[in-house]
Length: 524
Image 1 (cartoon, rainbow, N blue to C red):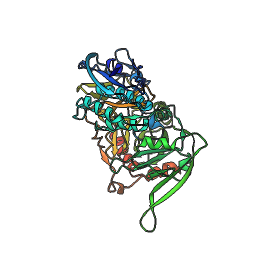
Image 2: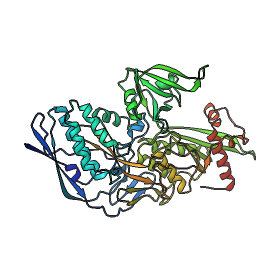
Image 3: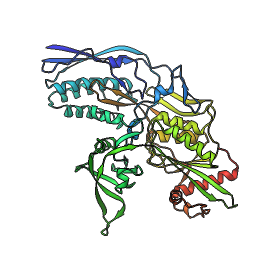
Image 4: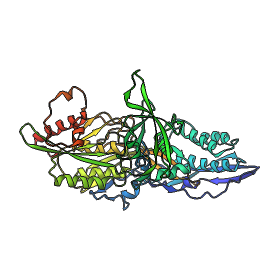
């Protein structure tokens, strides 16, 4: 029987810097549809990489150094644009060293499908399998024979008639790795994933996340003045249907893909009200028609909370809510802090609650706004157990005023990195609830057919080498009803936004913690 050779060029080259979404090199052979042929797969294994050198981040302008390479190149990427485009969790990225390759051939033969579209996905399967084989964080591949998994999946794919079914087999293969963040998305989904990295998206203005414990898709926030906000959709509402189709089994990105679309078109959504019940004690349903618009995804909102302390002194606390880590997050944060410093703010509350992450580089840049010196911002640990610290060089914070960071179970990934950096370096007090626990580093590779493969290639550790993945970050102070019984200082001005914040239990706890820090004369 005729053999068609398909060499895994992607596995022989040094792996891409995680976060640099790259176009995979063309395959040297074509799998011809309708031929009585077999696919010959050659792969390669790598030598163990040498110990990594530290990564250094230079000052708050995000100039960086690592052996002459810029951290901006290594970590910027597209992996977190999904957060910017109204979803929950997506792969965050960070730099890793590229080990040398050493060819060690493995040859397996498979039947080539006669269905042209399935035949093409077979090639995508080989690409995905090879990249996983060389870079996945768990070298045991969840304690299974990864080479055998390719053979099994190719055999299962052979009789299929559609590309969708064939992609389903790739997804099934990836699911056996036990890592929900290692996944493949279709060409159309990848194009949607990439939009929004500039801070704009065509959609309905709602942030969605899957609740880890129940699997429900919950509304985390709405863009003020956007279609969802105007329709009365609120934080905590559960999304159950989009255009009459159940969202059961969808993740945040897949649901966001259904909600996005061309400006002027509409989408009908059904939700369970997260704030009210009907008279029978049942959760009330609501169904609304939303018009898609261009949404400006500014991730930052600020206000100044003014009140009088016990000794009669007027205190100003700058409240900064960061909804996601987009490309503009650090610049907007820097401008906001400078403005509030000019207005006499003496302490800060940085709210990262329900912030599912985003561009890790943006998180590192934000950390430098608050930190000085050569502090470690985060550590990475690769599949060989090598720990790589990412440090600032000659950092200069914009303010030394006391800082409290608010976190909860919706704070994930880049939010956890930022919270860990500020906490472990003694810069901030953490208030709230334990964070989500997503400390994974992902690479993103655009495959030949335009689809994209997300691979978890390493994990994060906090500056103090604490685990983040599946553990999360524990706050210093929990928000509990008992603490809320403490008396509050009177507000000095009528500010609707500030007044609503003062009813927030965690804001109240944060302000009390800041008052204690100020009485200590601490500059944090």
